[in-house]
Amino acid sequence: MNGVQVVLGLIVLLFGRKLFWLFVGILGFLAGSQLAAIWLAGYPAWAVLATSLLLGLGGALLAVFFERLAFALAGFYCGVFLTAGLSLETGFFPQSVLLLLAGGLVGAVLAALVMDWALAALSALAGAGAVVMALPLSPWIKAALWLGLALAGYLFQTARQGRAGRPE
Image (cartoon, rainbow, N blue to C red; front, side, top):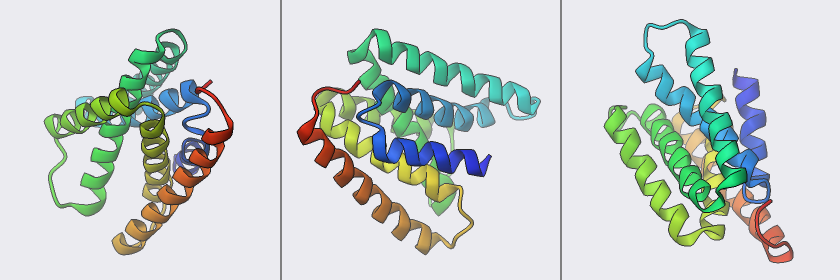
């Protein structure tokens, strides 16, 4: 799963804003796997995977048909994923459903208010987080790599954003 997470993370890191529907689908899958691991603890692995895939597919379909709502959903997924990642990687605060939902709400509000720039920032942060969380590195190296990748992804996306129109 780590290899898949790195590939998905790189796609989101570099093309999350441009390929909006794919960004929402991937983040739905990654956030869904975090939530399903909590909600479905003790259930078979296929149930966690199925739940993750359903959340990812649902998010991608929403992105195609209801763009404005999907912006907020993308922010929510991203907020959940980043909150879970920070919780797991730093150990500073316990991972709970309420904390994940609060992170999701912050991401949803940010994405709905600022839209394009927020998408570039959130997708860069989430993509970098997906890549870094899959690597067996020390916490300090992970933090530095996460920030470096997120900045590079944001700059890459915003450079392309100036030449392109709305997300696809």
